Length: 195
Image (cartoon, rainbow, N blue to C red; front, side, top):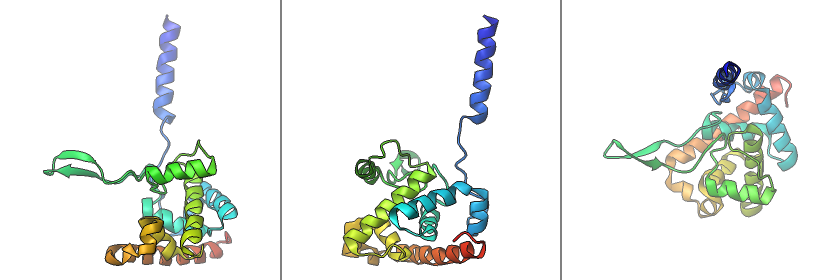
């Protein structure tokens, strides 16, 4: 009996120490070289997605920065009624890519990657690559056009076609920052020999 109790205590301690994956933001998300030095899996994941889908590494990183700030389990804020009664989240967006439930399900079905998880950087970058190629097919957006890829990513393919973003000045600002960040990341990655 003592052996069972000891085993249970040891198992509980081990689970408490290593059971949760660290989804925190990297220390310096403004420097692509520091970012991938701290999180080498980011470069591996974005390179794999670039090979598969053709979306450049800096574009993927800039989209992730805008969507989740590299927080793997990011969610949209909770909405409140009367300032205190929780009414659910603003949307189903989740993970590095902030993919919505329906779009994620479409990705899973089309790619056959049923085990993919939005909080996995490899799956999130693959999703971004997949979605971006859909943006190219449906709206003619070049895979290195970070600004318009982001607008289509945020507004959906039909919303992009309708130019719904034109009524959202804040979104146009975010899209411009995504483009600027993609250029900055590209320059930084070339400087440290990763491009």
